[in-house]
Length: 294
Image 1 (tube, one colour):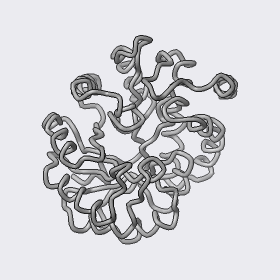
Image 2 (tube, helix red, strand yellow; image 1 turned 90 degrees about the vertical axis):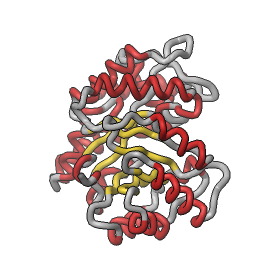
Image 3 (cartoon, helix red, strand yellow; image 1 turned 45 degrees about the vertical axis):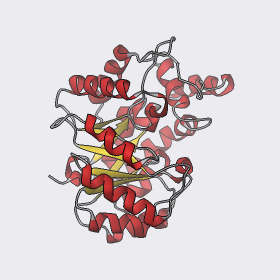
Image 4 (cartoon, one colour; image 1 turned 60 degrees about the vertical axis):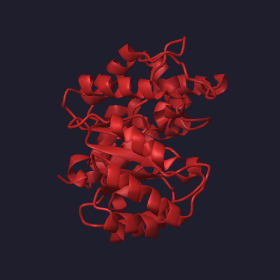
């Protein structure tokens, strides 16, 4: 089955809740997953960078995936993040993916070492050869320090059968349009940037993998669904209703913003693992103020 059909709509890049002692708060994680499913999110994305994966051990990642599968209970698809800047480590990490329970893996472009476009191509080509499920590329130059060009994305889409989609967060609308214009018909293209999800759906994207859906699942999912149904009047109303909140999600770092919202909503403790710290007090006050408006 094509990911373009299976993962259409809103995927939530779920955060990893921690206790005050920095252990994984599985009780809060279960409640958050349920909250998102109840409010219309189409699928769960576990262990993305929003989940603070650089600070989570391999054993903890296994526990999170197993727990998430149990809570989801086959109600919505599950995508699991398996990324990094060491190709061999990613291949080894994919061995932990439970067979038959994960729809796809999401893998960010290598960060810091900034490979050439040919290096990026060969990196993903090898991952695709070893992946037990379809691969979704993740292009986020603001975090990785390098861009997956439209040409490289299209080359991977056409030459690697197991690469079946991309989460595009380059912020480059023209690049996104070239991908949409020339990708295979069943290739999934979704936004990786909450702020521009609405215009990117208008250009032809099939939805979003969202940070905002953690704390605004109903409004954000309704916005995405309205846009996908070409009801842009309703979609615009919801987009502008949430816009100031979207700004606060990313004002310092991700996921400090979304964790501040979720803590104020009583869903999690406002705890992050270093080097990330909670949202600073002035912005946290703005979070409180925004919540009163919606």
